[in-house]
Length: 142
Image (tube, rainbow, N blue to C red; front, top):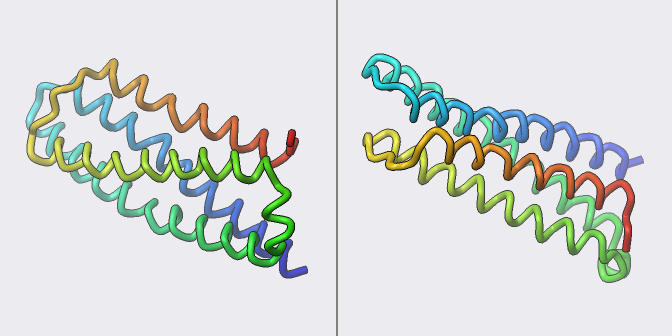
């Protein structure tokens, strides 16, 4: 029963985290496109609030994921190749999240040098990771 609660909270916080991780780069697209100072000032506030709002969800996703691994045990972990692949992708996602803070700082200081097109592509990376992570977690191909 405990494992089911851990899974439920792991998924809940993961969904909340991804909602923000999908929207944050979209704000950067708008920011990179705009030439108006008032728009930039508003987007800076929105970007900061969003990233700081979803970061605890990222932490709680990890906490409940680690708790699940602990509950399943060391032997299960050793034999779950799909989980090792999933964790590799999850680490990439946390690096992506950390890089978002770097981008936040660049925009805050008005030092962005990338185009809106870059941020559109940047926005696709977590989508691809999500697909692969879900497939690994559900299908467990190896």
